[in-house]
Image 1 (cartoon, one colour):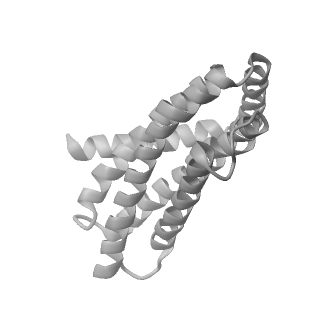
Image 2 (image 1 turned 60 degrees about the vertical axis):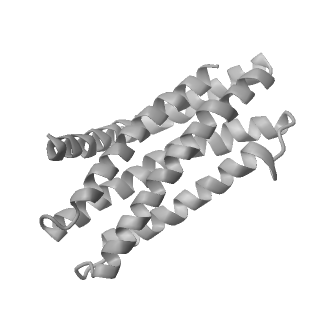
Length: 188
């Protein structure tokens, strides 16, 4: 299913940014706190604008709707679990956003919250991606009729075309590259 291939390719990029987040959180406080807040703001931007508004939006507004329309339950089972996890991710991202925007230096409590929230977010997304890649997407591919799969793919392409007109997709990929490169520089 071509639409699933698009989502899985996005998962690989998200995983690379999660790797960068894990590398970054290990170094927080070893340098300039302002730089740490700036880098956190970059991660939050990627999470909110790519992972959520770009990737999760396609799942929620297109794939999950088609699945529910074709017999998958919305209030239980895989779709319900994954929608709940999207909401959990948004909540964790909101906490990180608040820390990134905080004007005062981070306290010890703020740093503990930052560390635990970042680790919780990374862990949640890694498990979430595995559920989609190994369970939900194969179910959708097996049970959705071919014309519906083709329509999902067309809707994904339209969604992406809208986002590429103003280079939103390119901007977010460049942000991901910047975050990943910074993590690579820290670990080499």
